[in-house]
Length: 238
Image (cartoon, rainbow, N blue to C red):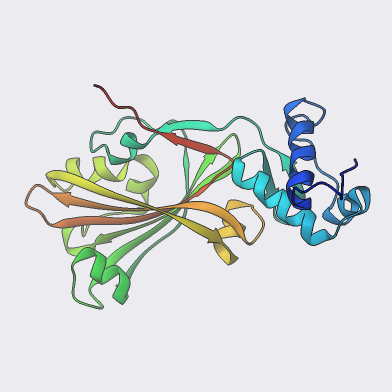
């Protein structure tokens, strides 16, 4: 694996192009584990910083993914998900199961209280789950619900039904609309560990606010999506 150091193109970009070509030509198939950054730096005769930047660029493009404590691998095809499905207030059976990590009743912190339009330290439900696809975590979810709206909520409810369906069917809440915000985010600590990715890996961060037909905020959720597992799209009719 050689690059031309007299070429005007940045070294990391040349390394990136060589690695991308190996992936696109199927020399490195899906699931292939790349040599370590130190090994690649020796093969290309460049610094590990140069290699790291090239690898990060390919992770951001979805060609590679990094697993915490294991290494860097060639990514497979990603799931396409319609952004409108995240907005939808009419929900059917989910394709991918969730694993419930924790379910608790807590006093809201200032951030959550502000998002839900509550006074600080108002009781809320805090639900933490991870969505699984093909035995791998793809999305880490944090959901917050006002306690007074659904006081009889249980972990069994969460395990067996979608949150929107529970609000409608069990607590007779009339759902009106949802607002969704997406931001870039760098996963570290628990978030990276739960998603089984290297600390410092970019992910999608979604925030969702759901309103009743009366305009009250009924739900606030944060979703952290692995970029190597999901591609989002939307369609427009003219």
